[in-house]
Length: 282
Image (cartoon, rainbow, N blue to C red; front, side, top):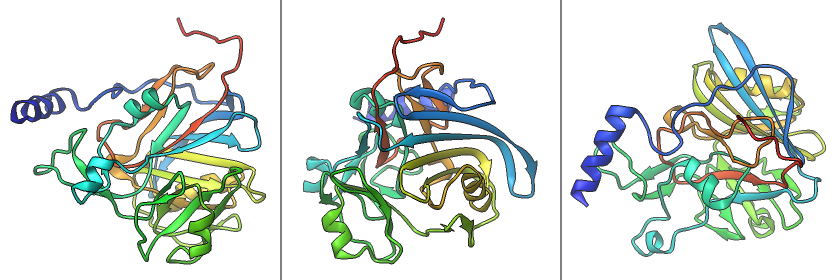
């Protein structure tokens, strides 16, 4: 075990990341339909006081047949040891769960040695998370993006999450503030960094996943509002921010588009039916 940890640390120091960590170039331009009901676009944000650079947005039509949501379930061994999850690279979960796209989810703590976090380390989510109707814990400061058995989405707009929402939710990920409300950014930090956010449109049909390389929460949510986001919140950011596209994506080379250097506790992903015929990259 000690040798494995030392080897992993050396790999991170030399190469900067784990599975899927080499970043994939993606073209900046119009929406690309990568799976049935799933579209992707890259926007180049002009540099300013709130950051800039590439912004990656995935839009999911939740009414499309075949769309499914994935949220990391509790790990039995971790729970028996007083924790909740085991750290994993987002790219590894995309492959194992056959996801078309996935991002990092909630803030977490881990039982890692020093500052180096490795796959398999025991971990605990800070916020409330729900997977297959199983609630990890109730944290009084959590807001939720939740989905019921029919994949109907909603944000909880009060904290802690009401008991009726927890009972209804089949899937949910937690955040600490709903700063995009009614299509307007109410507050939000202006400090740029790598960021991850989620949002819904006004009718709750379209889901947005967004990951930026170096942008403020305020500007990221404003960009989602421009694309039709009505309600939205930030997820874990910084070194956790990751966007991975699965091998079934059409017209877009699969792999890690942003981040991928840090294993995380919880992951939010989408399954979808592939478009045919499959366009294989050369």
